[in-house]
Every structure is written in structure tokens, then in C-alpha cells.
Amino acid sequence: LGTITGQEVAEFRCMMEKAVCLNLLDQGLSEEQQTCFEELLQGMEAASTEELLEFDKTFHAQLIHATGNPLFILLLESVSELYQEQIARVLQQTDESARRELLTQHRAIYDHLTQKHKEAMLEAIDRHYIR
Image (cartoon, rainbow, N blue to C red):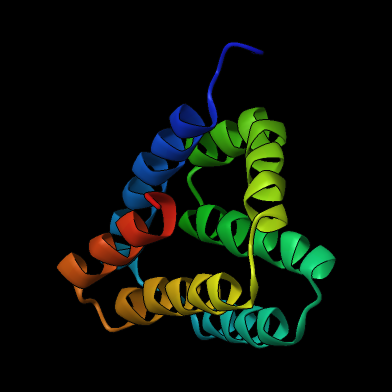
């Protein structure tokens, strides 16, 4: 897998997250899932850079698990190491301004998903992955 570039990982993640969020847009999130996302987003705001890596991983994993789709979950598990490597590289290069933008992007994805704003949600996902 050493020939896979960071850009290819980001493009795959972007496509997968769009598919996941479109699925969730149709099925909706339970109150319990919404509470979980709210807590994750609050945790991200207070997290150190090292902690942010774990919160980011959990945020995206929770989106996938919320679908209840075993194939999405299997794909996540099979590429999670590549995801983590890419996320770690991005966070290492992140200053405070970029960190705030990263938090804003996560919040936008979640808010547009729960408000069922399809186009805005897809645009938020693009902004998150295509820097």
C-alpha cells in the first residue's frame, strides 16, 4: 500500500463520507447518536492536538457506524490505518487558525446533516477533505 498517495486517501475518504452522509440524511440520526456527536464536537473544541486526532477518528467512525451498514463498517476497518496516517500528517501541519477551521468543518458536516441540507452538507464534506 506504499504507493497510495495522501491525495488518493483524501479523495477516497471524501467519496465514502458523502455516501455515508447521504445514507444518514435519508435514515436520520437517533437522539442518542445526536448526543454522541454533540459531545464529540465539544470534546474536539477543548482537545489538544494529540487528542484531536482521536476525536477526529471517532467522529468519522461514528458517522459510518451510525449507518448500521456492515459494508461501510468493513471498509472503514480495512482502511483505518491509512486514514490515521493521513489524519496525523494533516494535524501535524495544522496551526491554530487551521485547527479552528477543521473544527468548523466538522460542525458544518454535522449541522447540515441533522438539518437535512443536502447540498450544504456535501459542500462541507468537500471543504473538509479537499484543502
